[in-house]
Image (cartoon, rainbow, N blue to C red; front, side, top):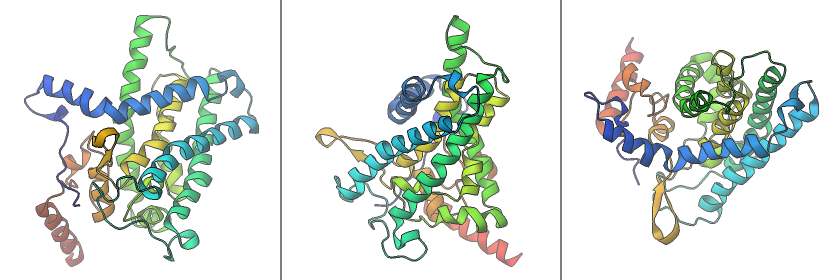
Amino acid sequence: MGIGEVTLPPLYDRPPRPFAMARWTITKFLWWQGGLWIAVGIVTWNWLTPPLESFASPAAWAVAAVYLRNVALMIAVVGGLHWWLFIRRSQGTQHKYDERWLSVGRRPFLFRNQTRDNVFWSLASACSIAALYETLILWLYANDLIWTVPTSGSLGAGAYTAALTLAVFPLGSIHFYGTHRLLHTRFLYRWAHSLHHRNVNIGPWSGVSMHPIEHLLYLSVPFLFLVIPGNPYLVTLATTYFLLSPAASHSGFDRFVVVGGRTVAGGDRFHTLHHRYFDCNYGTALVPLDKWFGTFHDGSDEATDRIVERRRSEIRS
């Protein structure tokens, strides 16, 4: 199937449409993926992460514990989605953007296998760098070196934490756009980002299959809480969100078939177009920076023609 039209959320409509905004937030943003990543962040912080005081003194075991937790989460979530869609092939090519399956025997991939290549970079590099970053910031919190806002104790503190929980998504979108544009500069693309772009036909493990240099930039979003007052839970939420959510957005399937033949939203049309056409849709649809900076592709033939013309102009100049 084709990728189809990309539409932006009604958050930016003028004049504002409050009911449309509220409906989109509940039925599109929170259900089902946004709500899932928030739930995963809460569970991970409360039950899968060592107590904060464990990070007060730098210790290799703390980093190892967070790393192993990251690996376990990725195997469960990313590996589970890959098994369902690409090994069991539960819905065949129904709702798949590209009818081809993942590459086997191609030289650009480690082990001449796209899936094994993607798993290697995800588990060896992404999980390691995410663990180092998270452990460092938790060490700062444990030693009261950055301001901690409690998650409870007062109505204001709870409301502030709830607001920041939702803010992780647009803040992460802005961060992603900035780092992604940087990675498309000539030097960083050649030495780092090109590894991720080997995945033209994408699958769940493609999401964070990146060069370590790219991981250093992409996974740095929790450092926002060095300047934004928050609490440790938000660091874990941001880490797990950036590690796990690309599995769905890179799944290669527009819809997931669930119980009774019903479907739920699957892959991200917006980002899938970036993998197909390369120099468009650097951010996300949640914060339409691409629309504002002229790099938006909505899936139409007209948008593709504009990209082709822009490339010709750049060559001529």
